[in-house]
Amino acid sequence: MNIVVLVKQVPDTAAERTLSEADHTLDRENADLVLDEINERAAEEALMLKETVGAEVTVVSMGPGSALDAIRKVLAMGADRGIHICDDRLRGTDVVTTAKVLAAAVRTVEDVDLVLAGNATTDGQASAVPAIVADLLGLPQLTHARELTVDAGRVRAEREAENGEATLDAPLPALVSVTEKINEPRYPSFKGIMAAKRKPVETVDLDDLFPDVDDTGLLVSRTHVMEAVPRPARAAGIRVTDDGSAGRRLVDYLIAQKLV
Amino acid sequence: MPDVLVLVDHDGERVHKSTYELLTAARRLGDPAAVVVGTPGTAARLKEALARHGATSVYAAESPEAGEFLSTPAVDALELAVREVSPAAVLVSATTDGKEVAGRLAARLDAGLLVDAVDLDSSGVATQVVFGGSYTVRSQVTHGLPVIAVRPGSFESEERPVEAGERQLALPPVDRAASARITARRAVLAGDRPELTEATVVVSGGRGVAGADGFKVVEELADALRGAVGASRAAVDAGYYPHQYQVGQTGKSVSPQLYIALGISGAIQHLAGMRTSKTIVAVNKDPEAPILELADYAVVGDLFAVAPQLAQEVAARREAG
Ligand SMILES: Cc1cc2nc3c(=O)[nH]c(=O)nc-3n(C[C@H](O)[C@H](O)[C@H](O)COP(=O)(O)OP(=O)(O)OC[C@H]3O[C@@H](n4cnc5c(N)ncnc54)[C@H](O)[C@@H]3O)c2cc1C
Image (cartoon, rainbow over all chains, first blue to last red; front, side, top):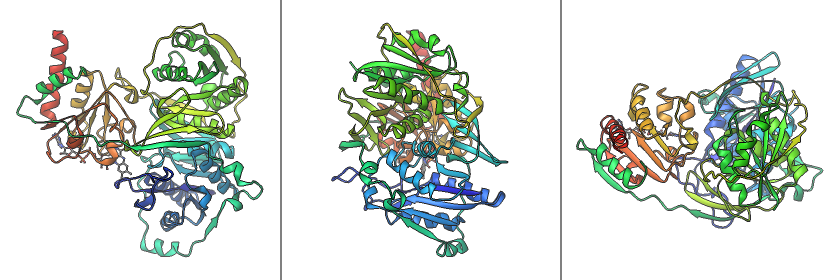
């Protein structure tokens, strides 16, 4: 089986994230960058399938030079090879272009059976890229999976959304996005980290992925950020220490605020 | 006025409130036209409610298998409707399903996609709140049709009765090799509580609730305030409350009138999902807990004392008048 895992390097959410003044894109220089934790679980799911049914696992990431760290981490966990999409022209791309580029990279891998991704990344939050990649590749989307089974050429997933849970079923090839509840990712071993250094990583740019298209069509920006304003920090309000009557006093406040 | 297509969220019998909000939002840009995707007869059942909320036309994209496949029928229906109507914009709710439908539609049409809009002006400029509430951003679609996913709860739903015309859209058969079939559904057992992302009051419990049993205190307060229950990730991870109620960066974003945090420390990833709430109340026994710093009303105290007293008092005041 051939599995492709899509991963992204994101700023650590425990640290402050800022937008650059010039073009309102993420200020990467001042961010602490890590492999997105949900993507890490997608990688874990791929590696579990590798162990149970046998698979060649290719990890794909789009991003600047530093994204190689995210790829190496997944290789250290046990993936076989990497594709790093690195092109300055991709700085600040929108959701649709991101998905187009990722889909093109998946197409360079032969006979893909399964594409795995995280259901969201902690920076973008659009939560739409996996579904778009599936649409572009003509694959069924089994997104927001908290459980996944691959068997006899079919894939089944337990989907979790705000309106309830659903069981999804589709033939392979398919795309699955996983939620953070699907597994606990493994830590790369020392041996894995050493081995990762020798695993092949191919670096590609837009000309490699879209040899026949001129990039003006692909890279046209469909949206424009006109303004980005930091929101004022919330100031502390009233503070009381419970003396046995805090609940009763709180009601007066809620009534005064017309919240009850 | 140009038409603005609105994808209808429904359960077959009832239109979801978020759709009425979309109809309100759509009126800023043009005449709202509703697209109903469902089994035959669905649009006829929903038409009156949609017309009452201002839908000037109702497009019925119906087929027996429409409800059987994830997202694809909705994407196909909107694509068909766009080609037929040439709308000024397409609006969907920024739910899990809605964001995926919006994305796929935008890719097929080479359209401009804006996700999680909390406001919209008459020129189509959308306001979004990013990075867990730390920035307000205003963006615009500059190329192609604007496809905008609007966050539930951002607009007031309004009644605006009109005469709605009904038209059929012929859904193509679903390509089974390219679509996931839904073989079973389990509704979230929310009881009578409002949906988390739509609720005007949310009461959330954290690790401080100390167990699944402890969540009864959270539920009782939520019920007294007619609100929804939420949970921190630590509470979910510990098995105190089901995952779909997680509020935060990797859970749901909520923006209610009132958010009450019980036994939640206020980690940045939790704040990311609730910082835009209008009023925040926090109860925590640790005076150093970060959530107390941004609460409009902070109680340093034991949640097991404060929350039940509050619930009782609310009930008593309601009864009194
Ligand atoms: C990438 C990433 C994504 C994340 N996403 C989310 C997310 O979506 N949502 C989320 O919530 N977290 C998320 N987290 C986890 C987050 O960092 C915190 O670990 C989590 O929010 C802590 O939950 P808590 O406040 O319930 O628990 P704790 O931090 O353990 O706090 C419990 C609090 O309860 C108080 N307490 C204890 N007993 C009582 C009592 N009897 N009465 C009153 N107070 C009491 C304590 O003083 C303490 O402040 C994420 C983390 C990462 C790394």
